[in-house]
Length: 86
Image 1 (spheres, rainbow, N blue to C red):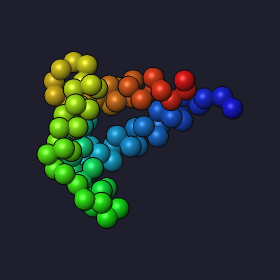
Image 2: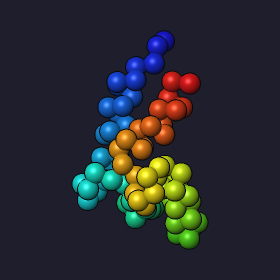
Image 3: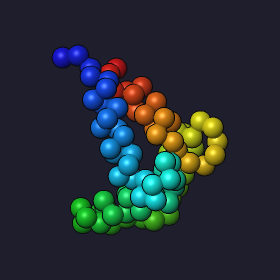
């Protein structure tokens, strides 16, 4: 089956918008931390806030190509698309 990049990009945009709760057009560490904590709590898992904060900081740093401490939709999509159709 061929990789439908257009469909994947639409799904990534929807996922990005779910995390971008302030509708700034960017994902920041606080939004990602909040999303992860809610997800883990919803699954009944105990979360270590310090560990999540550290891992989220590394995530944002990896994706943040222009070093503005936030992740744009393009940065997010470019990162995931490396693996989407590999």
